[in-house]
Length: 428
Image 1 (cartoon, rainbow, N blue to C red):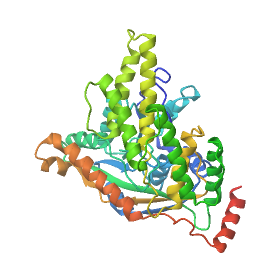
Image 2: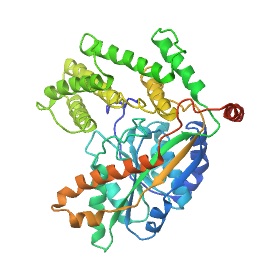
Image 3: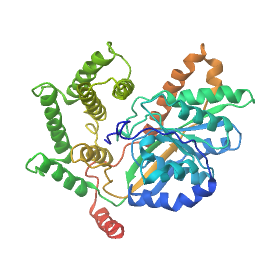
């Protein structure tokens, strides 16, 4: 996973969206080039636009809420906007705005993209998001998971920010007799028919085993090699934090180490242990650590300890992204590719892993959720946000389930091997 820089390394600066459709059209060829060259997305399979298209001209607030399992997701959704003929504004982690002497801030703002500090209060970004939804001119794209975990078949707990944005906008739109909608989207990727990524994935597994100075056990299945490697990675972390490797099933050991690290940091910074989902606990602890680092009274020794805590919180997020049983039952080529992309980033230090073959983006757009109706039916207004978040989570997972699993391991023929070779020639 990608490690986010600290705020003193990359201070947060808010720039509001200044959507300019001319810039959106001008950037389209470059965005599509990035999708093909860096993310290997060459084809699309889109269904459900009939749920979205009728809402575009009603003047209601429209929040697009997809799952977030891949670095290509943002570009794919912006390409969907091109196909619908209506640009999307989008909230994005502020770290992607860094570099190019401020050019990215200037350009992204005109593309309707604005930064959010996920560890901060995000008041400016929240206000801007509500304004976009209240204006009703452009849909707003928000990824409720908040992080890329490379788990396309399994949605992780949603943060409540997307629902809170929609609720705030629905209240404002009610004054004009309008409402706000949340549109759930399920998004997965499939390797193109006729292309077999398994040789490339096996070669990557060789490279990973080399890093551990392990002999290549190519006589074993790729699934066996991956889980054996995961056991080795976890044993090293257990040695670091416990002093010795632990026995037991992989999912239980991962959960135990995650709790061991989180509980210790919460004891130091909060004095109490929370029952919230792991991403929420990590977010609150990161904020506490960053606030303490920014305090002029913090000593160098305390700063070192805080930096260690931030590193440990990153380890927790890494552990959270490995459930320990993903691809255990009926594994698919796409699931193994996701795991190996994480290994490549976490072990080999690759900042952003590149997919090992040409892919198809599969999007399923679900029926919209009327936020105003939820506000009216909620027993208490404050309950609308958690209710909406829970419903959105169920709907996105249902869309992912409807897309179905990817290609089974070993499901490859001599004919498709010939096509795969042809595709490699074309891509190279």
